[in-house]
Image 1 (tube, rainbow, N blue to C red):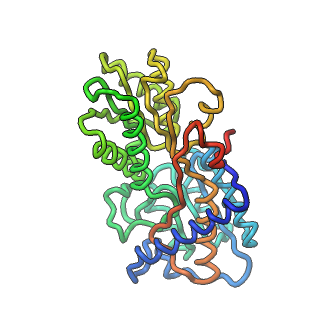
Image 2: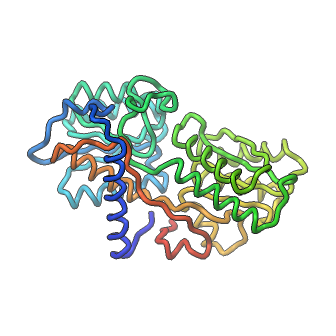
Image 3: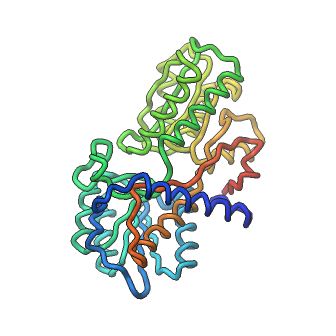
Length: 349
């Protein structure tokens, strides 16, 4: 994932600390946090943290792990990173393994939010601090979107509403610049529909787009959040919508948008007839790096390293100093395109 110059790292760190402070202030209720960390004791000696990630080989999460490891080394923390893949059952077994190995704190990105209550109960029983990154889980139900705010486990990540709003705003700008008509344009909104943060992102994108460009019909496409999954579903959507001349594509992540842009190219649509706005920039940059015309017009750069580092710092502050978890803390983002991605520090693998 992207690297930054020392001055950029300093600014990023300041932004992260500000975000953490604001989240802690805005979200504090004076009640015990949802993770039940009221029973967690401060650690006097060496701190051990286990970071359990879904899709650990995906570039964003690789960057997140790198950021977590760098912060752990800085703080003198023993950190173990576990790749859960897409296996919900592995989540539960690896949590149990981490607890058996006497981890003081767990940071989890779940493959499936339905395992949330099991993870929470295991951490509570062991009196171990629990924090999520990226995706939310609920203490008392499988669906975070139906969860009362006080039952959501504290989370480090990005603001779905803010990110989606930036994507929708940029898509509207590109639409206006292209001079397209709403009558022969469709929006494809692609995401894994049981992931709460994905729903937040695409909803906000739609609201921002409609506020600037009313009247463009949208097609919601359920995917598995992978490029191939999105490509297959978007290809079917294009076939089912003959007569559409122009397409706008956004989604939960770069994978959805890249898959959509690829499907449209395979269906014969030229780059000038497609507006893709990614979310992540780690795949979008590959299109720009090639120098070939692409429907991927922009992407919101989200740096997994920042989230991993902030998650470890937040857990350390809890375990070492007894500082309460914020309900949420957010890392910064930046919109990039073919002309600006390198200057922004996006590292393209």
